[in-house]
Length: 301
Image (cartoon, rainbow, N blue to C red; front, top):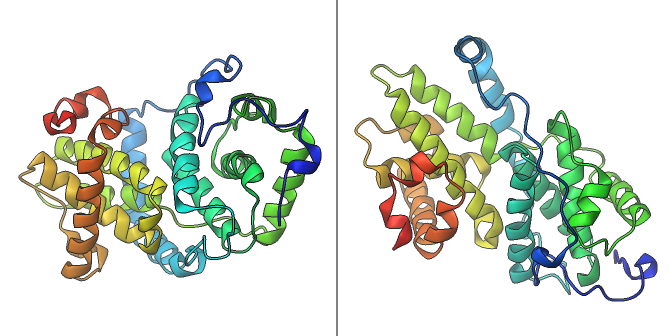
């Protein structure tokens, strides 16, 4: 069992993220702005052309890898980590990734790394938060130009762990996963289906952008809910976009047949997502751009 007890500083820390509040931690590092968040028209045109040239083949390649990277019942071997503990950890990682200005891709990849490791290795409860930030660090090294430093991540854990503990766990995770980290994510499929939508005749770019933003927020919520680990990322992405179109009452919704999933499977996933949204409306509103949140007055109900 992986445990952090042997190297922790001075006993039990007073504050933790999951199960506690990161608000009691030392002052966080200043929030950093992500590079390239504003996409110029020329860059958009280049992305669209790249999608036309390679999008379908890249989609088929990534979709073919889903089953290989999707862990089955990640908590089945965990005597100390529960679904509730996982929910608290991922719910904490969501604002952490936003604090650092990281991409949705980095968050999705971090949760995938977390779940795949949990599926292979029992983890002690006192090591679980350390595992979360380690997974986030590994994911950021994969997809971010400027990943957060070890010092910054440890500060958000109230310095409850040492640099050496994080480095040791990073090595353990990488070896357990055989350095196989390029998992297909919900984020990738959200982007793909959104580009497919823009290619359709009569596409409404405004509706597509709003649906993409709302679907991304819904997908973030689903990452924390253990019940959604049974759904493939491509199914979650298509269902999130379908639900977003339904909630925003769009006139030109995404044709969900592009996902290749049967209608009943899409409907089941969308119904579960809608229940999740109905239970977490206020949390979802905090994940959305203000202009999209204003179009969702029901989030405050």
